[in-house]
Image (cartoon, rainbow, N blue to C red):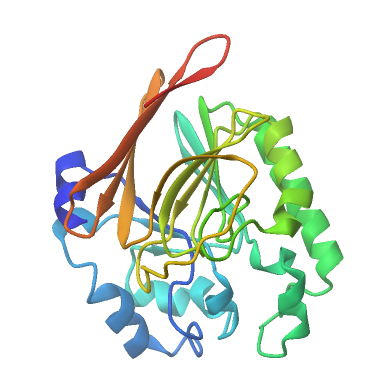
Length: 268
């Protein structure tokens, strides 16, 4: 990952959640675990850039507020988790980072989840979706990419997230989002929507991969790798190029999107 980051002169890195296994951080004083799991792992010069973070369900079973704390940021200034949902504006592209764990109903029946500043669920989700719609409407970026932890469409172990298909997906379709990027499933996959231009991309190959468990999705599977790896993006005003790599940096799959005045097209 560091070698690829150097070749691409990476501007920043995005984490798709489940940042600390198995139960997040225990608090904003859990600095030894934070360093061992982040600072001491991503040591390459090319990765000394801002890291923009969403939370996963495993982060919510610890202290879910700790990862946004100033105390953690002081340990490593790369760590950028300013809120549970926020926007990264990068001129030609806007990344809309969305907190997806509260959408998943089954988590609310488990006492170990830290719902401080979230409950009641319905109000939190309604406000989140309203803020997202307002931000997407106001965005002037050429590319719009929404990032969450849970998949909307997936052929790997966890499969589709019903609550996101019901509540989040209509917002993406209405507002011309180009891509939804997620983690949660420990695989790499690219899926095309069967009824919209949205691409569903899973980059969850950071650990615990090779599960060998798959589920059907009604969308079109373009690529699936049941192993560890990562994704790179290179975007210009005219085109976006994406590459999946395995842990050794070997290219597994490439594709591109192009922008015209009319619409985006796909180049594989």
